[in-house]
Length: 184
View 1 (cartoon, helix red, strand yellow):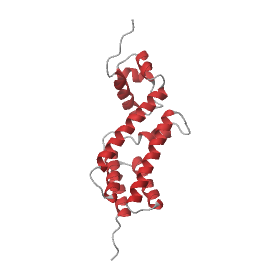
View 2 (cartoon, rainbow, N blue to C red; view 1 turned 90 degrees about the horizontal axis):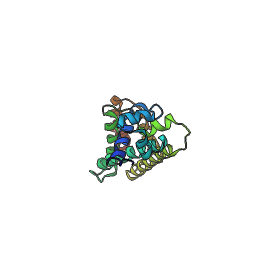
View 3 (cartoon, helix red, strand yellow; view 1 turned 45 degrees about the horizontal axis):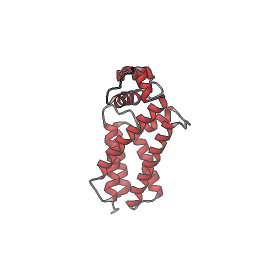
């Protein structure tokens, strides 16, 4: 008779995989490493995640949920469009400064698997497209235009791949773009 998995087994496996995937990259982590980190058997892993692609997609969906929660919290404190835009950029800068930061999980996946069209790639692409659309709405709501949105998005992309020390420079630069000082 087959044993019934303990409650939370799927979450335990996903949490273990997420830590490994983020630290080492999806390509570098084997399913045996996930089994060991999660403390489960191979059959149990494959019962919850029949393939590595399904596990990677679940990891990216989990990361998306965490990012969306952080962004929602950052944006909830202001109704002013410029303040909301700067709150978003500041939240991104704060995430880059966290210990253990290894880049944007979505951008990392797409870099590891360029041109891929599997489920994890679709999750990553959808997150980035939705993030860009949110940035568009915030910039346009703050009185900006498409060119300003492109410039801010370029700085944000650089922020994700830069060093923690550069995070404040990115925030300052975007602040200058949306709140230019008046010439004397």
